[in-house]
Length: 165
Image 1 (tube, rainbow, N blue to C red):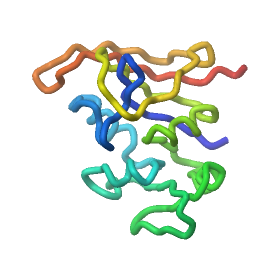
Image 2: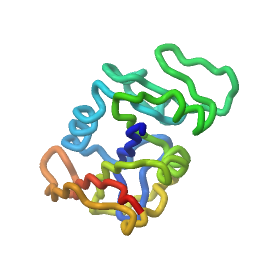
Image 3: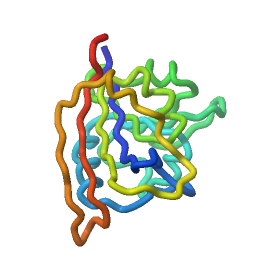
Image 4: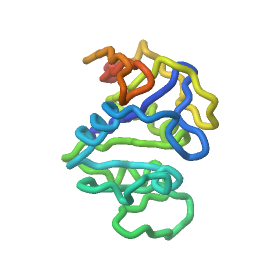
């Protein structure tokens, strides 16, 4: 079975983005994102890809989901549906779903792991993460992180694994 993991930073109001950008800069969380995803497979929608400071993300296999048939992006594996994306995902590496909102919504029902950063603040946003039914997940790790000079917000970092229901 392919390892499909979602990695996301979510505000108290389930906000994840505004104007195709992150809600805030959490330095330690971004370092964790890089450490976890480096050497693995990252899957994202086209708008998320366009929002990246470096494209494609270095030292990772990048897959971009688009509904524009036959669209190509240099250095990326292209997928034209969720089924196509799953088919093209790695059987060996961890496949990280990195956004955006509609991609998260489509992958949440089939993901087996969730790397969740819960930011202890609410934001005005235009993109939101779907509601998580926590009864379907086991908490493997939980770490509270206080705000620092590099991070304006405190947050809790979780690793959740889907229960075998």
